[in-house]
Structures are given as structure tokens and as C-alpha cells.
Image (cartoon, rainbow, N blue to C red; front, side, top):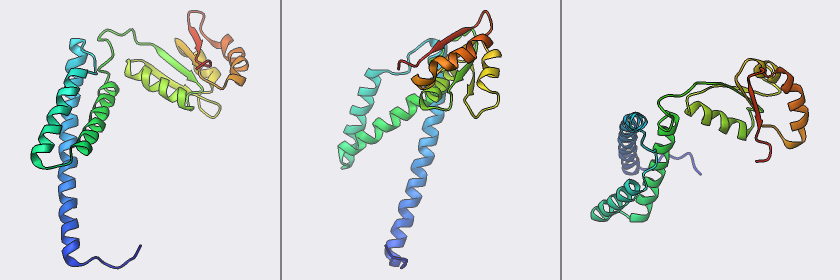
Length: 184
């Protein structure tokens, strides 16, 4: 690696690449705005996020277009697979999979800062629920969180599960639900 400046001709071409890449990113942002509209329609119409037939058609079309443009087909397909993955994730984050009529619940995930807890938090939020992540270092504490919600999900290491349930259980509302995902 060197701190020397590239030749002017090389720098000019790099600048051109940067400008093209910025346009590509603007187009991706525009594409994601359309994806947001798609998510809204899918939710209203009860359509699943993933459509395997549409994905296959899209990939076939992009492969053919790449071939026509003289671009290597495999990298183009790989890029579009990533774009579709990001699009599906965005639709899920916008609640496209959530039913229109959701009985919104308050959910506390005890152990919510762990990987499983965070994943469960995202999932419940995407389904339209209010989620609170509680862990050993959070405010409110796990006990306080458990006392203020409808559903308590225990997502802690198996060695701690019994002790956490014993500490949390008495704080759960009588009509509340407590469950664990320890066996996962």
C-alpha cells in the first residue's frame, strides 16, 4: 500500500466509477421505496412476502439482460439474490407479514440483549407488538419488565433458566403468559 497519488488518467476513471456507483445506490434507494409500497399492498391483501415464481422470473430476466449486455451472468444473479433478500427483509420489517387485525400485546424478552432475544424482539415487532428487551444491565430490570407486560419470553442460557423463571414468575400478571425458548 502506498500513499502516492494515482496517475491522473486512473483517478479520472475512478471518479467516473464513483459517480456511477452513487447513481446505482440512488436507484437501489428508489427500488426500496417501491418495495415499501409492495409491502403495504401485500399486508392489505394478505399476500405472502416470498413469491418463488416471481423470484425465478426476475432472476431469469436479469440473467438474460446481463447476457445481452455482455456482463457475466453469475455475478449478476448473485447481486440480485442479495437485493431480493434485502427486499424481503425490508418488507418483513415493515410488517408485510403481520395480519391486518392484530391484538397488540406488550412483550418483554428476558435475555433480550442476546442474539436469540434480539431476533425474537425483531420478529414480535414485525408482527405488530410492543416489545421491551430486558437483560441484566437494562432499565427496567427483568423483574420490572415482567410485571408490566402481557407476555414474558425467557431467552437466557440454559444454566440460568430455572433461576430466572423463579425470579420472574411471581412478577408476571395473573392473566399473563410466560414461556421460554431455552431448548433452542
